[in-house]
Image 1 (tube, rainbow, N blue to C red):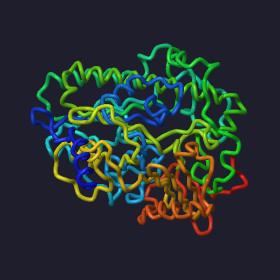
Image 2 (tube, helix red, strand yellow):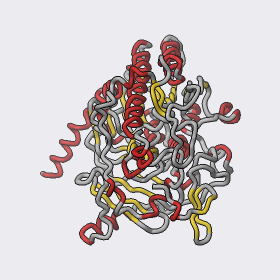
Image 3 (cartoon, rainbow, N blue to C red):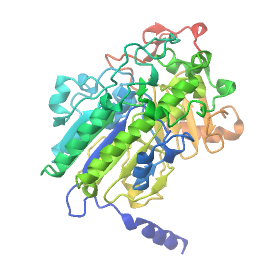
Image 4 (cartoon, one colour):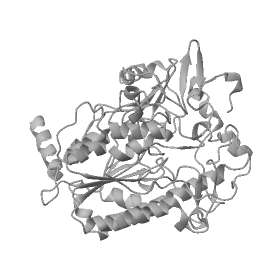
Amino acid sequence: MKYLTQIVLAGLLCVNTYQGFTQDGSKPNFLFIVIDDLNDWIGVLNGHPQVKTPNLDRLARRGYLFANAHTQSPLCNPSRTSVLTGLRPGTTGIYGLAPRYRTLESTREIVSLPQYLAQHGYHTISAGKVLHGGITPEERKSEFIEWGPDGGFGPFPESKIVKEKLDMVDHPLVDWGPFPDSDSSILDYKLADWASHRLIELGSSAIRPFFFALGFHKPHVPLYVSQSWYELYPHDNVILPPAPESDRNDVPDFAWYLHWYLPEPRLSWLIEHQQWEAKVRAYLACISFIDAQVGRVLDALESAGLAQSTIVVLWSDHGYHLGENGITGKNSLWERATRVPLIFSGPGIPRNISSYEAVELLDLYPTLVDLAGLPEYPDLEGHSLLPFFDLPRYERTHPAITTHNPGNHAVRNKRWRYISYADGSEELYDMHRDPHEWKNLVGLTTYDSIRQAMKKWIPTVSQPLAPGSRHRILEKRGEYWYWEDEKIDFDTLID
């Protein structure tokens, strides 16, 4: 009787079973929106109590929110490579900002997500930052059928707004403050203009089905938007993320190796130069600006008459620290760097549903294949999210896994985060009781069985750095560790 009851309940929850096609029997279009460096600071994820993201929240209410979604890498290039190839960084050997996957013998011939959709009749479009920047002529010939504007980080002021020299790398992109006077000159604004116009054209054309990948640059640094967005967050009322001085007391020293020497400043630098509140405020302002651009594109989708035939998929390539764990930027295996927004909305997708099961961006490729009703593509390492749409309270058995350089992995399930570093050191956190990851439970015998269970999910394959690997690269040579070809001397740590 208990078993029969479970079957009946499952049937009741499956009333929105997704059939893979729109109401008229055609394949769905996809609007595939990626936002650069956006952590969980959006309203529906409760990442920051003041953030204002009405359009992202609206999209989530109209669809399915994966509230415990995680990236495969806390860095742009390996994260996007993983999404587009369906392979983990440890499989491709791509861990840094270079190389590109088409330059490697091992991944040159792989059929990427847009290529697979194109093989099955989809018109594929890329605009903005979808692949990691600097698209090559070879990629333009093969990766997408149609290319819109690349977008970018501009415009830039005549000189940096933050005048103080940064503590590690004084990079020109690492800057923040109100600029320009009007948003209309910002490249992300222009990108939303182009995308909106292109959607209107698609609505009156015969191009079906289409896969439209649209990549916004902000809130990646530089954190420049007009003063109007800063006014949403008055400077005397900005809530700073919790970051106690004791944050890293029980964290292995090796954790510093993953973000050894970076353009993004440490929290200590922000505090010393009285810039912590200014950077948090700038990040919040940029999030609200990008939310508005997403809203403009979603409105265009509606105006074009495409909303009922198009599945919107919105995601970010990785998270971003704003002082938590003593750092800013990405390049960590903690929650703030790995957790990302992930929303599906459109025909056949359950509405106003949230799941806290752990999922991965690696799951996007097989999910879109299933939603399009296409044959399964072999060798993908992710798992389709379709069971969630068939059964919204679906429970997963496998966790989300994030990798940053060979041998460094985080394993996240519904409750726990386990981190294993290449030197053998570990961390374990109860994310229900300790959402800020302040108490490392490794070494406490009470939690050893949980640690062992999580450790079993660590990938058995961890390829060495691919040829041409550069930027944010950590490797061991003999007895010593090297960061971007420089031997690490812990006595020189900037913390």
